[in-house]
Amino acid sequence: MDVYIVSIFPDMFESVFSETIIKRAQEKNRLKIRILNLRDFTKDKHRSTDDVPYGGGAGMVMKPEPVYEAVDYIKSMDKDVYTVLFTPQGRVFKQNKAREFSLKKSIAFICGRYEGFDERIRNLADEEVSLGEFILSGGEIAAMAVVDAVTRLIPGVLGNEDSLKEETFNNGLCEYPQYTRPEEFRGMKVPDILLSGNHQKIKEWREEKSKEKTLHRLGVENG
Image: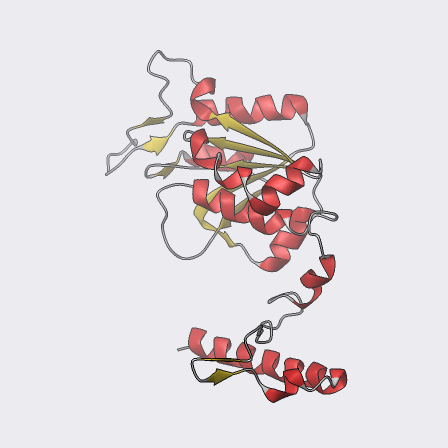
């Protein structure tokens, strides 16, 4: 997969994308990430990417020209790239969207800043995405989270791909509780069933606990 990220703070990505799974994916040539500095696509001497809003109001608004120039540049290299805009108004990113994105050959993520985008920038996007109903200072953290979630679903990236089958949200359920050594820690014991060696009973226990966790989560979310 080819990933393009447009941001005015490209250095923010360096440490995140040079560690763990994302690093390994790039080393295996399963993933190629290009970070584009939006200021490189400005035309004024101050390299401005924002301006005051028409009609007045607080804050600054991202200008359309540099964003269009950046996307034009990406499409000159990859005309079929799928373009995603991070905005609070976008559809909330979930695991099924991560799976959908992992099947794309190439994706461009546009990171906003300041008060928001000039409305005309939305015309560039194939899709608008949000991490949730809260406000971040910009789209960079959202881009990091989405790239991480998508990367681990790319075939050949994880060392043990069977681990994906039982993860939370994979089948609509939360993942069952997990334990490791020691068997007892500060008075808290590993459930006996997991020490029994009875794989059928363990499977049934895990399925039941997955359902319990999911129901609890739904109850918390619904107040």
